Image 1 (cartoon, rainbow, N blue to C red):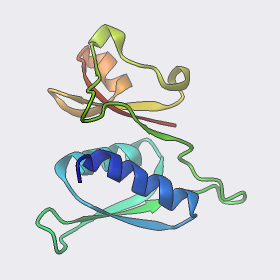
Image 2: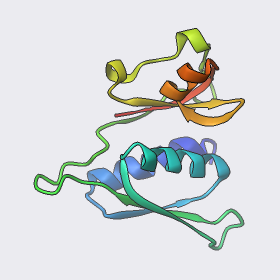
Image 3: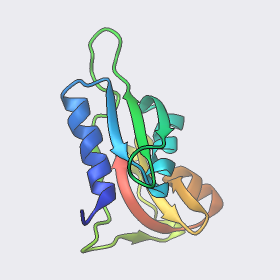
Image 4: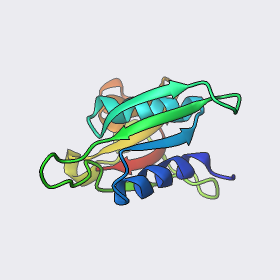
Length: 132
């Protein structure tokens, strides 16, 4: 696999469109941090890190849907920085997803954080994905 972050986003996107309750994803430290951000911002219901067959383990993510209409909480997951073309943003030029309604996950020198946290701390980094 050449792009594990893209695989992470695609598994969540596919499970959400198929109305699955839980999705299993091979773990890595970056994916664990991205999962924590998704949970803190309310895009997923819950998550659990398991020790599995592979050395890093497994991430079980419980997807979130609207109670009545069954519409997924995640409308769009878009990969921005790809292995063939990395996208970086400076602190004064960080992206705003849907004018602040969505989030951008950014990998900085202080860890993986959202675009809003990066603006507050005045640090830039690699823009991994957009979520809304």
